[in-house]
Length: 308
Image (tube, rainbow, N blue to C red):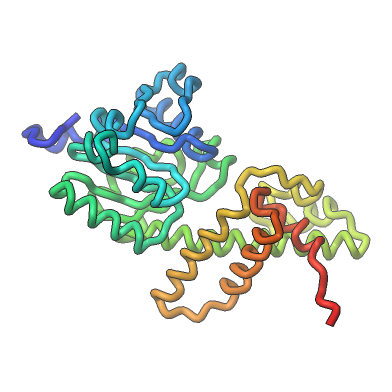
């Protein structure tokens, strides 16, 4: 691993030779870590709670972000948002205290502007040693477990190419543009997912109240234009009403806020986005935010039209 001041050539710093770390081992981070570990044979990990299962599989546990940074050339961060990452950066045990030449791959769904600001801060504070790419993912827990995630990368071409090589075991990484482009793409993705799950939930309620069996409906419609990966993933939940969490609904509020930021930055007068955002704000306010996004069915069913 190359540290500050090393004089080795660039070939020693390729994706193949790099030592990789992973911070954030939740529903998405843990399966991604397993794929990285299986592909590379080693992985340095850190999270709020120890992961003896990953250590038993060959990963190296780090008690602090600094300890992790001292051992790696690149780190995948799978935390909810940038504030959770920023809390791990500073101080004597923070990531920056141990970082030499380091590529930080931000897999969180975050603000494109926020990612750019953080990257500038890290570049300035480390004299250019720390590089950043954004690499949010889509595909849910199913895609993470199967290694079939869509990975949306934004950043400098050289950094993005390196990140794509490192993340290939987790799915299909594609460089979409400069820093922040991955987050813009994820905002577009979340708009489509949010609108689609609301439509699926609403259609399920309409069909059931009209005397149509929801399973028969979705078995039929899934073969037409209404079919989608989201329907395939959530069909059983929509049919049975089981909204035990997989991808929790409350995160959509944050994600749609970032989509709104993109709309404002691009001066786009959106049509669906305000309505979808209002719906998820209402859904969370009604106490359903910790359920799976398929709770859209229950949300629609429990709403009441104004008497007036």
